[in-house]
Length: 470
Image (cartoon, rainbow, N blue to C red; front, side):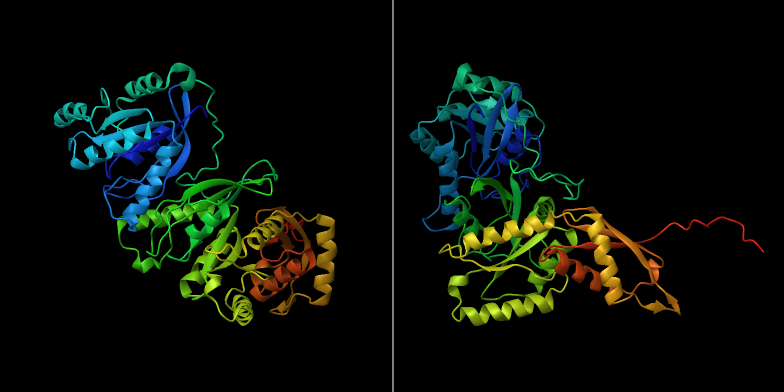
């Protein structure tokens, strides 16, 4: 990237709409409600031939220290420090407000180049606000409409003028950003080889206030995400690039998932949908259970959702520093995992604490162990030798007096391991026998802690369609 661009302004002036326009994807949640954005979001953007890193920020508000709004403002101030240039956005229809004037001084103190952007400038209603913007002292305001894409050519020229041509056109943009969350992404795709140079995508999901953002801040070693005692702080799915022992990682923080019946507001529905897309697009999903209240019904629902999606799950027992009798609690949780989540045998349970950092290395070790099993491929010859032993040890039952035969098995894909077995009567094979085969696959090929899909298909009948001889 040639430079970093931060979009600054009070709530509900259109910062996230412009962010989505610059990155070319609907990454940030957009709604008419003020204060939708809370964490700062960063992605690769472009405007004409300019390539840059663009940062979406929370709306600047005057607030007392310690409040949620004050912590949001601190995140925005951190974005200003990181940026090379700031876009100070106002709402041209509303005109210059006292809040706009208050934060003008903050931007001046930063010493960074500032471009004043008058958003929502389409139509005659914005003319008065546009003229009033001159009084802020940042030079000529750039009238744009982020929603309709108007005025972006003028914004391009203003950026080049503020930075200088050498700084603005330093290097071409890096367009390799396919691992961002795209609305509609399913996470199911063609099988791909493991490339150690590509970032491993890890999503952290769980109930509200389980400690997801606190854990991610501990992993990356900085206060990158907004945290606090309030439940439901995170709204967007925020991606963070990181490295663990030389391996590139892309972490996704998500909004807390409540029971579906309790999700009524439109904004929360958008947040939940964004979190679910992050889970579908990830390779590993760390499911955060509150160790002080583990295995709630919603926890089990979230885990089942991850398993049915075919993602590789790891359960992190958060807030472990608050647990007193740890060994007894851990034994009880392992027993509950076996009993309440029978879909996957050998689930990884890792006690962690985002406050003290306890268990973070063990969590990452478990992530890579599950990732390796999730990508494991087994040779067809070995699978069929295994099938002969399994069928001899416990033959399929006879249904309606007719024996069911399983002839051969092969693995058709990984991520998760998926197998197809040729069966004489797949519709009659009991589910219990399929579970027996799946558990035997886990035990024989070390596929613990990962979803396994086993499909039974009827083989072609070579005599089908032939006339019967008398």
